[in-house]
Image (cartoon, rainbow, N blue to C red; front, side, top):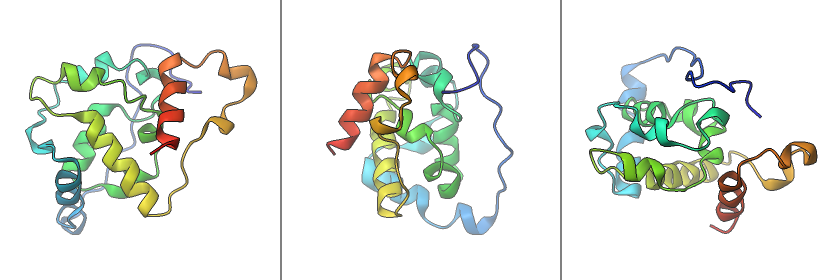
Length: 147
């Protein structure tokens, strides 16, 4: 579980931008697979403020979208945030630009699996912490196993 139990967003490491990463095609692939206009995101933060599992994430949903915009595939697919997402649609409902952020998260999980990145499963939850995990989190974990 996350050490960040307050309302402040987690500290994120600085990202290293290179032309090669930005132009590598990752963003284009995410847009094609998800069908979502990720470039429309202007970082209002509504998705992150409404997320019931934000305190458990090391990268908030709006920052995930920013990383997609910047082509930072490795920073995303090797992070636990895409697996913690409960797929509850709170982010999607709150987005003023109509971006289905949950569909983007599904796409990112699909890309991670294609890349051979191991994913988070319910067997990785320590039994003593399982009682503390919000129900949407557990439902999301099981839902992801079925896809």
